[in-house]
Length: 233
Image 1 (cartoon, rainbow, N blue to C red):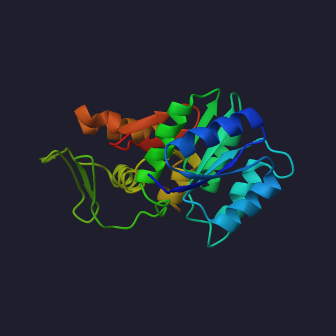
Image 2: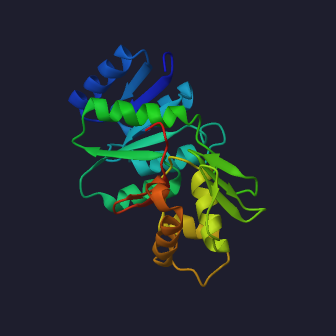
């Protein structure tokens, strides 16, 4: 992780300074910003490996910064971890829908945040949000859409429905990223209008049942959605 570049956009000076100190001690190159407009400019100028972004900021809020970054071809691939206060569930969902990779809620420990940052960086620059048809292998789970099969630790599992297979394939392809129900609905289901957001829960339950002992690989992120667990976390 040495020499990785991070921009921290946080208006609370005590938090910002503690974070800068801890990340620099781990060998990161760090820049800090206290307001949204300067933070956005700093990110655009430095094009860091990761952005740590508070949502409640003066000048320009975190969601708007996230939107600007994801709409710019140069910065669209930069991973973003949102920092939120408790009770900002709607903002968390909005940020993830805009393309943020993860989030932490205040108060948090620097150790917890460091682990989150390293987990996101291990995945490389933000994985493309796409489904494709090529087989995906993650943490001993193989999802093969063309052959319509799922293999776990060498064992072929009971038949999955087309919807279940598409959902599992998409989540595995984007390992570690959190997706809301609406996001899964629009990205995976497409024009299948008979599938509604709460039906996603039913499909996830069915997938978990068929995964058996590996069911925990599909993680529920309370109040937000689902993700395929990163084995390194």
